[in-house]
Image (tube, rainbow, N blue to C red; front, side):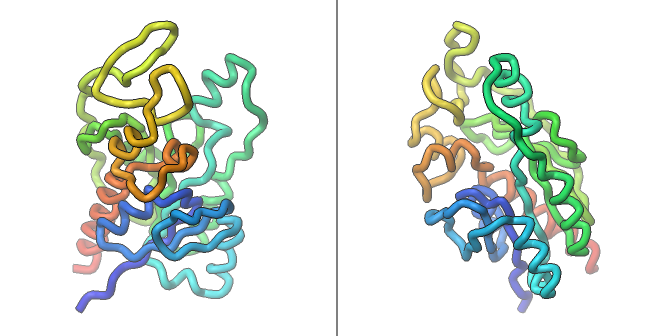
Length: 231
């Protein structure tokens, strides 16, 4: 009988990424610096990079087949760089992508680094969109794949607008805006339905979440790539 593969979900937030890996057949362990009582899997509260360094030093990292990371991206995400900068909003944000990658390289394991569109410097080995999975959000996300690879999927044409107000104009459309408040943004229940997330109703957790369909796809692709290497 084949042993179940285990993934380490760092900067896990409430578990959108983790749930997708679970659907792909993985056991999941999470870590986030904020208490996440709704996280649906075994969980360590603490600094993700310090925890990863500990796992490397103790050799416990060998329990995992894959490490998934979603390091904070406010330093480079499109919202901060664009809208917030133009309005003079926000403050200084630390870019954790480079130190995350350095530790991931030290693990010797296959890994994933996830970031939204923007200026955070990762390879865009895979880019995923809600339309690829028939979701009610667009939510483009890019993924750098370390020590494994898979083909880039086709990005289908969007079916219309994201519903809501923008620049004083209201547009209806097949997608909801799962971020911010007002201006026609999605309600809690709309965000849950649009992304396939049922275990949390915390706005901050929903607005930051990766739709599980993304990591279900990645997890399945990883299993396929791993099997091809083993054969």
